Amino acid sequence: MNVKTALSALLLALVATPTLAQSGEVNVYSYREPGLIQPLLDKFTAETGIKTNVLFAGDGLLERVAAEGELSPVDLVLTVDVGNLVGAKEQGLTQPITTPALTERLAPEFRDADGAWAALSLRARVFYVSKDRVAETALGYEDIAKPEWKGRLCTRPGDHVYNIGLIANRIALWGLDKTREWLTAVRDNMAYAPSGNDRAGVKAILEGSCDLSISNTYYMGLMLNNEAEPEQKQWAASARIIYPDADGEGTQVNAAGAFIARYAPHPENANALIAFLLSDEAQRLYANGNYEYPAVAGVEPAELVLSWGKLNPSRVSLTEVAAHRAEAAALVDELRFNEGAQN
Ligand SMILES: [Fe+2]
Image 1 (cartoon, rainbow, N blue to C red):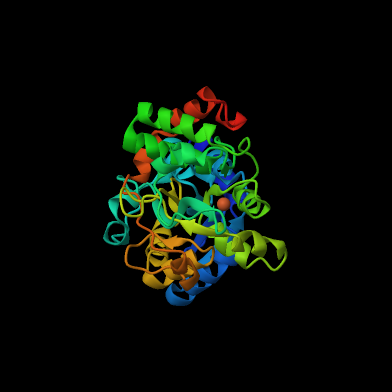
Image 2: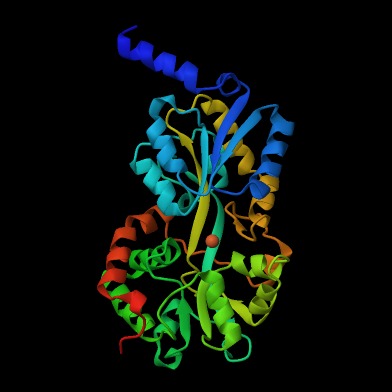
């Protein structure tokens, strides 16, 4: 054992607590909140006998995995947005998922081709339209670029990951030039300079300052059930959801997902956890906990989610969407999208 290896071993002994070093366990870093994850992990432990240790945090977990390097105790990381999943792979933080459940349960567009990550739930970026001021029952992404939407659209800033995902999906589908034309027209139809979050757009619908907000589906469920801020129920009640291109190319989706850390001390257990999270029951629980969609085809979302309409997800692979994120961000800058209408 050379000095460096000896030092690493010593550090490992100091850093990793005895429980983390035992087998029969799996160590999880989660960006997703305890209320969503803990019941699932408890079920996993009940079924497999594998204990789970979880570190929850709103940010900094990927940086932490990178900084910990080969001394990291983490086996599995749960995160949202395909940009984070692809980014983890690019930074060399992942190892291939080997459970057969990955390819048996997930369509190719919802997992990495090399098994570096798996989607666990899907969120659709849709149109919330005013129940009073919008008559349309079906719309496509191209429709909101038309003149009849002048001064009627709203969304959060274009450089937010949710909108970058949508624009990157358009680039993958249409190419850069058509997407530039579309985004320019969408910008010029904005009711006000893109600002706030997905819920603020729906609030603007109630207030009459916007007729169509581009927002994620699950906020409808979160607002309708918000007991802490009941005024959000009114925001949600003023709008209904249209799934863009439901009958055509499909609606753009992003994912929440997981990867197994490159230096996972318990990769078999991490694979067992991925297989569990892709089971019918876990998929239902995981998706329903945040009004999202199961990533596994054929598993139904919650009744409330179904009541908004049927999701036909865009078949553009999430990997391909992620590959166009930088172009999407450059387009948002180039068009000064965040300043709102310019023509
Ligand atoms: Fe969100």
